[in-house]
Image 1: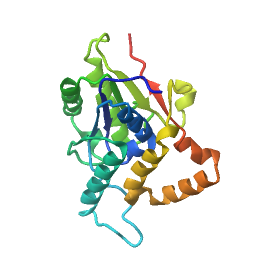
Image 2: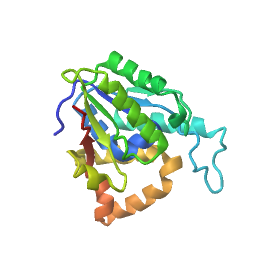
Image 3: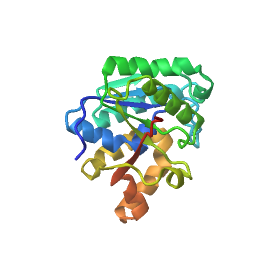
Length: 224
């Protein structure tokens, strides 16, 4: 059972970032009746997968991914989806204050008790890292006594070496189908992985079952 929150704010840069790592957690919060807002910074319009043979062009991909994101939000039970309109693969070049302000404005509007995003330094992709840094900058402005919790995804190769075991492990077995449906919604980018995952679940493969059994987070260590 998850700790009951008053409001959850999820901030990721790309459609499908939420599906792989946190869609079970999101669905669990929604089943508890907790409001969840998902702010997706870009539409992932520079995604590499255009299909073989191509199902999309660079011009049509944004609309495809927007529709997929909306379907994923519905699968997770999210009613408040924000598409923030930034450009894919450019977040590392955005003005720091602009990105921080986007996060700050969301926090001021929603007053979340929990924020879910990436862990800076352990999120691999430049857009992931830029998002993580913006979230941390915005939260650092808030007095620690009023600061929302930050549960962060970290998956760089040296994560456990430097951060240890995850601080939060959410059991998502009760919302396995919701998670799979969120991943299926992003079919333009996830088709091959879903084939392997479905086969692994059928055979109870431990690596496959990890995806639909629990979701793991680190709590950010704030400087004194």
